[in-house]
Length: 155
Image 1 (cartoon, rainbow, N blue to C red):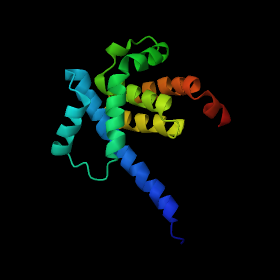
Image 2 (image 1 turned 90 degrees about the vertical axis):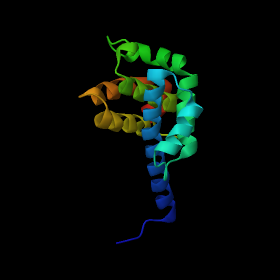
Image 3 (image 1 turned 30 degrees about the vertical axis):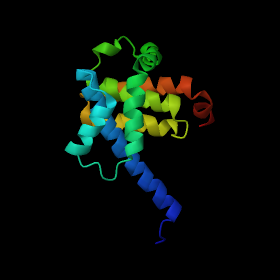
Image 4 (image 1 turned 180 degrees about the horizontal axis):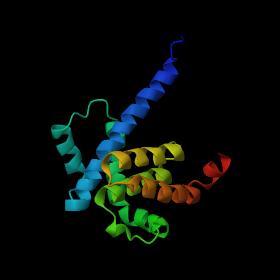
């Protein structure tokens, strides 16, 4: 059995750190949606209350701040794809995940669209209401076709 290359190990470590960042960002966005706590305050609280070791702290903060600052623009992007549901009627976990993944699709071209979608779907399976992952997957797939047209076509 061959040992993974150091480049492969670095990519795995980054993926794990980003996964944790998304997990905590989803929780922070949930909190923000419920009580409008600013991103910096949420980040400070999370650093005290949770074990953030092995988390890409910069990415966590970028997602938290980026979604807060551009929530209205993100919701405008999401609205046509949310089927008959109004976004404000979505449960807070689903809404947070849709916003976070849409932020990544729009602003983080270094993150493959499939990664952004899969991370949101997996978090929805773990934390969202039953079958919310199907809704998240369907909406984000359509968003990716618009925001990442070339990348989706190249698959």
